Structure formats: C-alpha cells, structure tokens
Image (cartoon, rainbow, N blue to C red; front, side, top):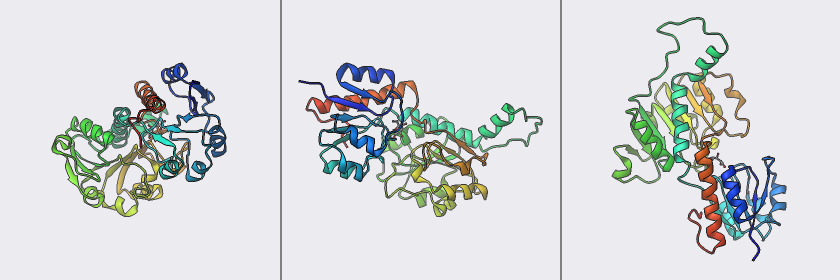
Length: 319
Ligand code: 8YV
C-alpha cells in the first residue's frame, strides 16, 4: 500500500521532519512561508494529511472547499483557534493538537515576561546598549517586586499550572480563575475564583492562559483592566485576541497598569506598533514554545497523532 502523503506547510524541527520523511511521503515547504487559503485548498487535493502551525487558517470557508482526499489536520500547536472545528468535523476531517509538551517552555516565557516587565528589562537593556547609561541613584529604574506578590492566572490548564509551580519558587500567592475548580492536589493551596471579576482585584500580576474562543475574545477589556489593583502587571503568552490592545495601551498610559509582557498580539507577525513607544511593554514575537526540546516534542506529538490515525487507532489528541 502506498504511504500516506503529508504536507508540512512550515519548517518543523529537523528531527521531526526526518522522522516524517522516514515514515511518510512528505511535501515540505522548505521556504517556510505562510500559505494562503487558496494554497491550502489546492494542496488538500494531493495530500492525505496536513501538519500545520497556528499560522495556517482553516476557516469555515476553507473547510468547505478542502478536497475529500484530506483526512487529518494534525496541528503542531496546542491552540486551535486557527481551525473552525465544527466546520472541519462536518467535512469528516480529523483534527488533533499537541498539548502537554509545550507547557514548560511557555511557562518559562510567561515568567520571563513577568520578571522583565516588572523589573524594566527593556528600558534597562536599551539604556546600557545605547550608551545612554550616564547616571545611577537609589531611586533610579525602580520596578515592582515579583517575590511574594499575588499572581492571578486566568486559565488553569497545563501551562497555567506549570506557571503556578514556577511562581511558587518566588513565594507568590497564587489565585486562579478557571471554568472548573481544580482538585486540592492540583490546586496546591491556590485560591479559586469563579469569575475574572473576583480574581482581578487581587492580581498584582495577571497571566493569561486560556484559549481564544468567541467567549474569551476581548476578555481583558477596559472594564476588566480597571478592576486590577493600581500598578498591576499584565502578561499574555496565550493569544492576542484575549486582550483589547487599545484598552491595555490606555491603561498603561494612565498608569493604572504599570507594565505588560506580551508574546502574542492581535496581528501576527508584526505585533502592535502602538506599543512600540511604551517602554513599560516588554514584547516577544510569539516564541513561547520555541526551544529545541519543545519544538522536537511538538513535532513528534503531531506525528504520533498522524501515526495513530493512519494505523486505524484513535489519535491521543483528537479534538
Ligand atoms: C506555537 C502556539 O509557536 O501551540 C500553540 O498554540 O501558539 C505556539 O506554541 C505554534 O503554534 C507552533 O506551531
């Protein structure tokens, strides 16, 4: 029997692509450019599976036009807001993701953003790097202390729980809001809040870890930002859609929010140029899961799902 044919619209790690080429007939976009809806639709006629990233969009319109040859979309991402799941299901296309394996790397970036935003890393780096450091005083570059502060986590899934674990190393007091309260062994003393409205007033630091859905889009709007304690720090490593970016900018400009650490934006790649003039905003280009170990693990997890599907088993991460 001919080997299934897979399309890799982005350049995954070498180890993942080597394994894929060993086991499948592969079409790899070595140029690593983004693909348009038309290109995705055209490619679906000549492959049995696609292993995309969050940068390939499978909207309802695309789903409707995909060729019936395509059987599985094995995402190389945990987030699947780029996929219209009901529309793909209606076409009989199996969709999987890669949970678990990126939790450590993403929690590391959340910690980095939290520390960097609180301790003014960007301002400091720019000053020293630019040769503009010509003064020192005890009242110079004073930031906000992370150790012992209250951390509010919205979305206490895998990444949120790893972040809580790292934050405990900084003696932070953990508060969280989640659809479901965790059991005591997972909560580890963290305080549950049944709504963002209850959580936000105690969040000296706020970190977002929930998926982007129609319900969470614009979650952090001006009303909710105003519920944070004055001088709070906002961190986002989940999805740009969770934050109303102009409301965040206004909250930083007014001083209500002291700083923000952002790894994702409404518009990607590119980010929001309106933040560029604000030294209080520490920004990264969506690299939460970008470590060698995690990229390999994500590629392998996506391929595990493909292997299961083509050998007639239910993929572990079937959505
Ligand atoms: C990835 C992500 O960088 O997993 C996700 O949802 O946003 C990131 O980890 C990306 O999707 C890699 O394919």
